[in-house]
Picture 1 (tube, rainbow, N blue to C red):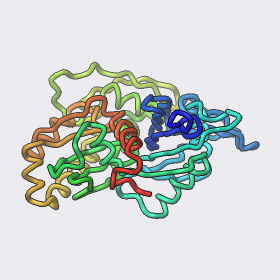
Picture 2: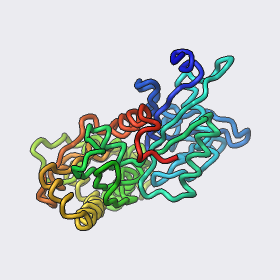
Picture 3: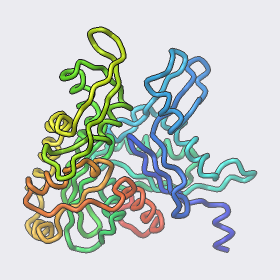
Picture 4: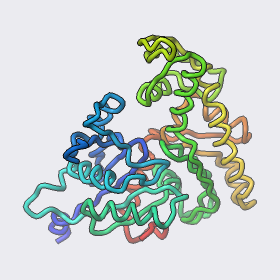
Length: 341
């Protein structure tokens, strides 16, 4: 009977991120794509989503528009989000059957989301085919994905640095004790790099190039034990308008990102200051855990540890921690008390 019901109901866990969307179906990673869609302006038809649309970003002519429908962790363009979600769900193989299965979904959302924004996420999921929807806050999903026991009374601090938001939360007894949410995250880092290249090197670059610089030589500190090699950047000279190439090193990028990382440090300090004393004692013992793409920034754990005087642990495969936690929450659809209906 259970097997028969599984034919008509499919369970999907979605980490709907500003930068990337990750979908798990039956514990298997089936979609890991950039959260971007390309549309024909005249016909309003979808031309590409995910990686294919990302390749078009910054290179389109006037008839094609690339849209990143999520901004700062929430839906900025409802229609484009709905279209993008439908295309991603098609990639899971749950559509296209004579009798398409009902979809049961758990979707990850930022902790600072408003009721209106929650409704937009729910509506997008339902329009994309969901029959039952639950939501889970990002830091809670990250903590579960890391392997922390979120239902225990033991307090844990988790920092999830994604594309649109950085979430700092203390979790105990299946709830968020203290939380701080910041709009400073991966996208802001890219903007910092674009601005730095303009000011210091007189060169104009786009988002994809800024992302490549961040991956190649991004750093949170100016003193690394194993520094990466200098990276050659191609762009347009702002004076002559010609294509040029310049080399940048990790120390420069650390300077470019310094102010934004200081903002995240401020959110961490604020969360620690408002944490109950007994949970503070637990955090002293357990340390701080970092997940999300931002956890991969070189030297970030070292910098946060120096600021807080606490041990800092980077999650295994931090990019997938939130998706893993969302998948575990999906298995406990009606059991976890923190899932939002």
